[in-house]
Image 1: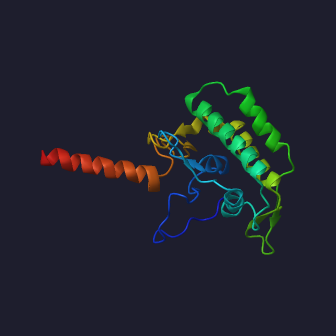
Image 2 (image 1 turned 60 degrees about the horizontal axis):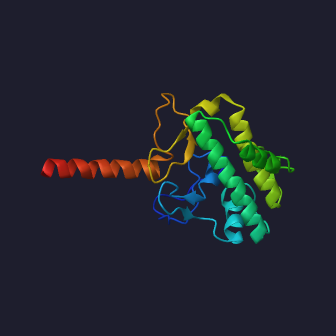
Image 3 (image 1 turned 180 degrees about the vertical axis):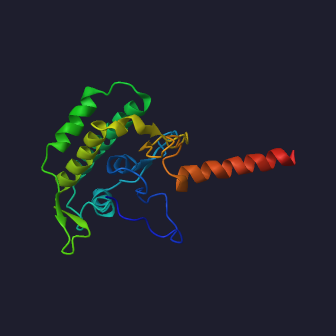
Length: 199
Protein backbone atom coordinates (compact mmCIF):
# COMPACT_ATOMS: atom_id res chain seq x y z
CA UNK A 1 0.00 0.00 0.00
CA UNK A 2 3.04 2.25 -0.28
CA UNK A 3 2.97 5.11 -2.73
CA UNK A 4 4.96 4.90 -5.94
CA UNK A 5 8.52 6.05 -5.61
CA UNK A 6 9.62 9.22 -7.40
CA UNK A 7 11.02 8.87 -10.92
CA UNK A 8 14.62 7.69 -11.17
CA UNK A 9 15.62 11.13 -12.45
CA UNK A 10 14.74 12.58 -9.07
CA UNK A 11 17.78 11.99 -6.88
CA UNK A 12 17.06 10.50 -3.47
CA UNK A 13 18.93 11.38 -0.32
CA UNK A 14 19.93 9.06 2.49
CA UNK A 15 17.26 10.63 4.67
CA UNK A 16 14.47 9.63 2.28
CA UNK A 17 12.22 6.83 3.45
CA UNK A 18 12.40 3.46 1.65
CA UNK A 19 9.21 1.91 0.30
CA UNK A 20 9.89 0.29 -3.07
CA UNK A 21 9.19 -3.42 -2.99
CA UNK A 22 8.85 -3.51 0.81
CA UNK A 23 5.96 -4.67 2.95
CA UNK A 24 4.55 -1.89 5.09
CA UNK A 25 5.96 -3.37 8.31
CA UNK A 26 9.48 -3.71 6.89
CA UNK A 27 9.34 -0.28 5.25
CA UNK A 28 8.70 1.02 8.77
CA UNK A 29 11.67 -0.95 10.12
CA UNK A 30 13.78 0.65 7.37
CA UNK A 31 13.35 4.08 8.93
CA UNK A 32 16.59 3.11 10.66
CA UNK A 33 19.18 2.48 7.96
CA UNK A 34 22.70 1.07 7.93
CA UNK A 35 21.89 -1.34 10.75
CA UNK A 36 24.99 -3.38 9.98
CA UNK A 37 27.35 -0.45 10.44
CA UNK A 38 28.89 0.72 13.70
CA UNK A 39 26.58 3.74 13.58
CA UNK A 40 23.10 3.30 12.10
CA UNK A 41 21.38 6.07 10.16
CA UNK A 42 18.22 7.44 11.79
CA UNK A 43 15.56 8.68 9.36
CA UNK A 44 12.99 9.45 12.08
CA UNK A 45 14.88 12.10 14.00
CA UNK A 46 11.95 14.34 14.93
CA UNK A 47 8.23 13.78 15.49
CA UNK A 48 7.64 15.58 12.19
CA UNK A 49 9.61 12.83 10.42
CA UNK A 50 7.24 10.22 11.86
CA UNK A 51 4.27 12.26 10.66
CA UNK A 52 5.88 12.52 7.21
CA UNK A 53 6.38 8.74 7.06
CA UNK A 54 2.67 8.24 7.76
CA UNK A 55 1.84 10.28 4.66
CA UNK A 56 4.65 9.11 2.37
CA UNK A 57 3.84 5.47 3.14
CA UNK A 58 0.41 6.05 1.65
CA UNK A 59 -1.34 5.24 4.92
CA UNK A 60 -3.02 8.62 5.30
CA UNK A 61 -3.24 11.89 3.38
CA UNK A 62 -2.85 14.33 6.28
CA UNK A 63 0.12 14.24 8.68
CA UNK A 64 -0.98 13.24 12.19
CA UNK A 65 0.05 15.21 15.24
CA UNK A 66 3.11 13.50 16.73
CA UNK A 67 4.89 14.20 19.99
CA UNK A 68 8.29 13.20 21.34
CA UNK A 69 6.59 10.43 23.33
CA UNK A 70 4.90 9.21 20.13
CA UNK A 71 8.28 9.05 18.43
CA UNK A 72 9.72 6.95 21.27
CA UNK A 73 6.72 4.61 21.10
CA UNK A 74 6.96 4.33 17.30
CA UNK A 75 10.66 3.48 17.50
CA UNK A 76 9.92 0.82 20.11
CA UNK A 77 7.46 -0.78 17.65
CA UNK A 78 9.95 -0.39 14.82
CA UNK A 79 12.69 -2.24 16.68
CA UNK A 80 10.28 -5.00 17.75
CA UNK A 81 9.34 -5.46 14.08
CA UNK A 82 13.00 -5.56 13.07
CA UNK A 83 13.82 -8.21 15.67
CA UNK A 84 10.82 -10.35 14.74
CA UNK A 85 11.82 -10.01 11.07
CA UNK A 86 15.32 -11.19 11.95
CA UNK A 87 13.90 -14.13 13.93
CA UNK A 88 11.72 -15.15 10.97
CA UNK A 89 14.68 -14.91 8.58
CA UNK A 90 16.97 -16.88 10.90
CA UNK A 91 14.24 -19.42 11.79
CA UNK A 92 14.72 -18.71 15.48
CA UNK A 93 12.09 -18.12 18.20
CA UNK A 94 10.69 -14.62 18.57
CA UNK A 95 11.06 -12.72 21.83
CA UNK A 96 7.72 -12.58 23.71
CA UNK A 97 8.48 -8.98 24.67
CA UNK A 98 8.65 -7.98 21.00
CA UNK A 99 5.44 -9.87 20.28
CA UNK A 100 3.74 -8.02 23.16
CA UNK A 101 4.80 -4.64 21.74
CA UNK A 102 3.45 -5.56 18.32
CA UNK A 103 0.19 -6.94 19.73
CA UNK A 104 -0.31 -3.81 21.82
CA UNK A 105 0.03 -1.59 18.76
CA UNK A 106 -2.22 -3.85 16.67
CA UNK A 107 -4.96 -3.73 19.33
CA UNK A 108 -5.64 -0.06 18.56
CA UNK A 109 -8.43 0.64 16.02
CA UNK A 110 -6.84 0.58 12.56
CA UNK A 111 -7.41 2.77 9.54
CA UNK A 112 -10.63 2.08 7.66
CA UNK A 113 -10.52 1.26 3.94
CA UNK A 114 -12.79 3.26 1.62
CA UNK A 115 -13.30 2.76 -2.11
CA UNK A 116 -12.81 5.71 -4.42
CA UNK A 117 -16.04 6.84 -6.14
CA UNK A 118 -15.06 5.01 -9.35
CA UNK A 119 -14.11 1.86 -7.36
CA UNK A 120 -10.64 1.78 -8.89
CA UNK A 121 -8.61 2.68 -5.79
CA UNK A 122 -8.69 2.34 -2.03
CA UNK A 123 -8.05 5.14 0.44
CA UNK A 124 -7.35 4.56 4.11
CA UNK A 125 -9.33 6.85 6.34
CA UNK A 126 -8.02 8.00 9.67
CA UNK A 127 -5.78 10.73 10.94
CA UNK A 128 -4.44 9.39 14.19
CA UNK A 129 -0.96 7.99 14.67
CA UNK A 130 -2.30 5.02 16.64
CA UNK A 131 -4.34 3.94 13.61
CA UNK A 132 -1.25 4.02 11.37
CA UNK A 133 0.90 2.11 13.86
CA UNK A 134 -1.91 -0.41 14.25
CA UNK A 135 -1.92 -0.94 10.48
CA UNK A 136 1.86 -1.43 10.51
CA UNK A 137 1.70 -3.93 13.38
CA UNK A 138 -1.20 -5.81 11.78
CA UNK A 139 0.78 -6.10 8.56
CA UNK A 140 3.52 -7.97 10.42
CA UNK A 141 0.94 -10.16 12.16
CA UNK A 142 -0.65 -11.00 8.81
CA UNK A 143 2.79 -11.91 7.47
CA UNK A 144 3.55 -14.15 10.46
CA UNK A 145 0.23 -15.96 9.99
CA UNK A 146 0.86 -16.65 6.30
CA UNK A 147 3.11 -19.03 4.34
CA UNK A 148 5.16 -15.96 3.35
CA UNK A 149 6.79 -16.07 6.79
CA UNK A 150 9.04 -18.76 5.26
CA UNK A 151 10.07 -16.24 2.59
CA UNK A 152 11.44 -13.62 4.99
CA UNK A 153 15.17 -13.05 4.46
CA UNK A 154 17.75 -10.48 5.54
CA UNK A 155 19.45 -8.29 2.96
CA UNK A 156 22.90 -9.67 2.20
CA UNK A 157 24.41 -6.18 2.19
CA UNK A 158 26.27 -6.35 5.53
CA UNK A 159 25.67 -2.65 6.09
CA UNK A 160 21.91 -3.07 5.65
CA UNK A 161 20.54 -6.42 6.93
CA UNK A 162 16.96 -5.24 6.41
CA UNK A 163 14.29 -7.95 6.49
CA UNK A 164 12.29 -8.42 3.29
CA UNK A 165 9.82 -10.88 1.81
CA UNK A 166 11.20 -12.79 -1.16
CA UNK A 167 8.21 -13.15 -3.47
CA UNK A 168 10.33 -14.27 -6.43
CA UNK A 169 9.43 -17.60 -8.00
CA UNK A 170 12.89 -19.06 -7.46
CA UNK A 171 13.11 -17.77 -3.91
CA UNK A 172 16.71 -16.65 -4.45
CA UNK A 173 16.43 -12.90 -3.89
CA UNK A 174 19.44 -11.61 -1.98
CA UNK A 175 18.83 -7.89 -1.50
CA UNK A 176 16.14 -5.77 0.11
CA UNK A 177 16.06 -3.79 -3.14
CA UNK A 178 17.90 -4.12 -6.43
CA UNK A 179 17.79 -0.32 -6.76
CA UNK A 180 19.83 0.20 -3.61
CA UNK A 181 21.72 -2.70 -2.06
CA UNK A 182 21.57 -4.88 -5.17
CA UNK A 183 22.92 -2.10 -7.37
CA UNK A 184 25.65 -1.33 -4.83
CA UNK A 185 26.72 -4.97 -4.79
CA UNK A 186 26.85 -5.08 -8.59
CA UNK A 187 28.99 -1.93 -8.68
CA UNK A 188 31.38 -3.39 -6.11
CA UNK A 189 31.62 -6.63 -8.06
CA UNK A 190 32.26 -4.76 -11.30
CA UNK A 191 35.02 -2.66 -9.72
CA UNK A 192 36.61 -5.76 -8.20
CA UNK A 193 36.66 -7.47 -11.61
CA UNK A 194 38.23 -4.36 -13.17
CA UNK A 195 40.97 -4.32 -10.52
CA UNK A 196 41.57 -8.05 -10.96
CA UNK A 197 41.90 -7.72 -14.74
CA UNK A 198 44.22 -4.72 -14.32
CA UNK A 199 46.47 -6.78 -12.05
